[in-house]
Length: 149
Image (cartoon, rainbow, N blue to C red; front, side):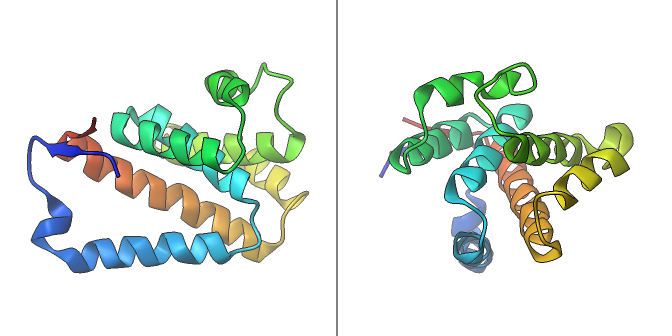
């Protein structure tokens, strides 16, 4: 376990039930039919966009433990130009970016339709929850200035 320094409020200590809810959601996502590496890519890419240093560090380490390669993690910010990602992963990463930056233009029909080519409705729901869950955690991490050592 990493040593965590919180420069502001420790939300989870103030109300542990919130962490129970967040942990329960992650547990449910891990039980879904989504590939673990896909969930890892979502967590890392969303955290990169939101500039959540704690989550980037934590989920990169987690992805490496799950078998993800350093090369693909390094290429993740440039996934659109990189040959290292499958069409399925590209569809998910496009939706992850559009949902994370939802204020720009929402989730496009084009991006949503790409998901439909690879996933069931239930899996699409799981993908959207995974993206939203990571955005939620990033916003808490960035707002409280959570850091890992």
